Structures are given as structure tokens and as C-alpha cells.
Length: 392
Image 1 (cartoon, helix red, strand yellow):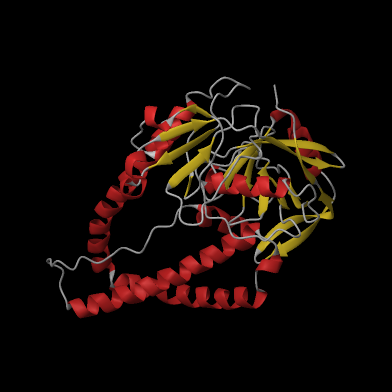
Image 2: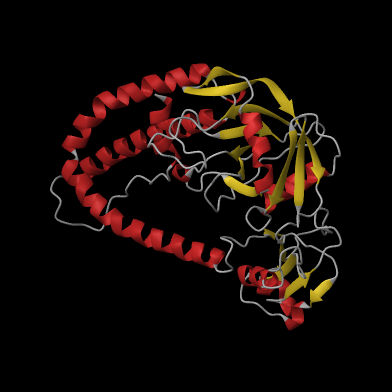
């Protein structure tokens, strides 16, 4: 049951099609059609809510879900299933007409998403993101008045061009001013900088709104943290260009020196449907779900939900935030079926994946979260978040 739910719920959801109110040859009263479409939209919203709930319980611990609410939703879903067939038959012609019109709208939206994705990936790493109203200081390697760029993405790309050599990065942070009214003479300036400590960047916030957008880029082998466990060390190369806000949170936890709430509590390896290198050989994505799940909740650090920064697909070794955090998982296998549903904020250094495999092989017990069967570690594994030396 759980395995059948996972795949469809992790794909991108389409909005209910909108009716064409401009006129046409469809027979019947428009009032009747709109009433029918309103009912369909309501049913679609209930189904989407159920999908979201099942997706959440698939990956989150039961403390964040309600068993009574799950049962209620199950009854609603069963009732919808009994009536939706006849309703779809009655409105078949109307839906077909609306679907044809909605398809062209969806194609336009899809084209727009592709263009956005292209602009994000033009620098070659799949994304180039920063944080608005955020100003990074530090020694400039290229002054903004000598480096005008058309967009924040282009500014980030110019920084990346100076950060291509492994272990050598002449630019690890960029600052861009893109609002002409607020930036005035600094409009389109792109300042490229080099931080003295890439894991403790110089961030200065003014009393009011800052007109600058800033971001960071870590060269290969730089910006590495380690999750130190009793079973070994797991080094993670952070990716602030993919997930700037998530990486900023990780840096804030790192600055605490101690994280009593940091632990792994769920471990699911590669089952019969997976190859040894983490490729899925069978259609169902689980169980087991091929992941090592834990928490970065630091006691004493106020946590605010982090906006979704999904930009790439989870594959073996990637480290992903779950929802808005602070829970996360390390992917033990490739999860193309999840698309960009999770925020990828780093990847495990390949040499340390055997430690992940060791943790996944520890004794577990079966548990059920919502309607999903999971494998929970019999003894949670605590870890310390530490700085790691650059990887050569």
C-alpha cells in the first residue's frame, strides 16, 4: 500500500484545469458547467491535500502527523472514490473541452519553467542562487563598478568563472544590486569577493531593507563539514549555490560547537529493487526507501522553516532537507521519482559513503508512519557537526 502511494505523490502536481469563460460551442447552461467544475475543483483540492499528507508521513516522523486526521482523510478519499466516476462521466465533454484549453496554458507554463531552469543552469552546475536583502562583505577581487551584469544569475556566473579550479577559488561570494530605484548609481553592479572564512562569511545587515542580493560558491573540496559519529566520519560538501538559505542554517548550527539534537534515527538500505550502486531496478521506489534520515535540530537555536530550494534530483550521496527542515536525509540510492521535491544542499564525499552504508546496516525495527512502513534504528546514532579540512 505504502509503496503504491509514494511514486505518484512525489511527482509535480497539476492544478485543476480552468474553464474557458470566453464562449464556445459547448452545450448546456454555463451555470451548470461552472457548478460542476466547482465540485471537481473541490474534489481535486481534497485529493491534493491527501497527497500532501501521505508525502509528509512518508518522510517525517509520526510526531508531526495525526493518526485521527489520517483516518478521517482516508474516509473522505473512499467517499470521493465512490462518486468521482459517475461525476466524470456526466461532465466528460465539458472536461475534455476545458482540458484542451488548459493544455495550451500548461505548455506555456512548462516552457516558462524550462526557460527559468536554463537561466539557473547556464553556469553549468544546475543552479546559481542567492538571498535577497542580504549583503556579504569581504575583500573585493573585482569591483562592482567595473563588473556590470544584467541579473543576479549572471553575477553569480561571473563569480563561478573565477572558481573552477579544484581547491582554488578567487571568488567565493558575490553581491548584486538589481533594483534601479533602490540601487541608484549602484544599479547592476556585481561585486565579486573572497571571504576569509568560507564557513563563517562576513554578513552585515542594515537597520532597514538591504538592496543587495548575495550568494556564495564553494570550489570543489571547499566548504566541507563533517558529521562525526561513533561509526566514522561523514564529510559533506555544501552547495550554497543550490540552497543558500539551507546552507546558511547549517553554518549557524556549526557555529554552536555542540548540537545535542543532531542524530540519525531512520535507516533503510538498498532492497531487492536496487542495484549495488544505488540504481533502481524495479518500478516501486520502496520500501525500503534507500535513505539515512536524521535531524539537524540544535537545542538552543530558534528554528524558522526554510523556504523550498529544490533545484536538482536526489541521487546516491546527495544530502537533502525534508520539507522546511530541520530534518534531512542522505540518499543511499538514486531517487529520480522524487524529481526536485526536496532541497539538495550538499553531497557526501565519495570516500565516506561506506560509513553511510555501515549506518544503514545497523539493527532496525519496523514502524508505521501514517500509512507508510519504515525502518527505525533501534538505537539512534548521535553525531557532531564539525568543520572538515578541505578535500584535495
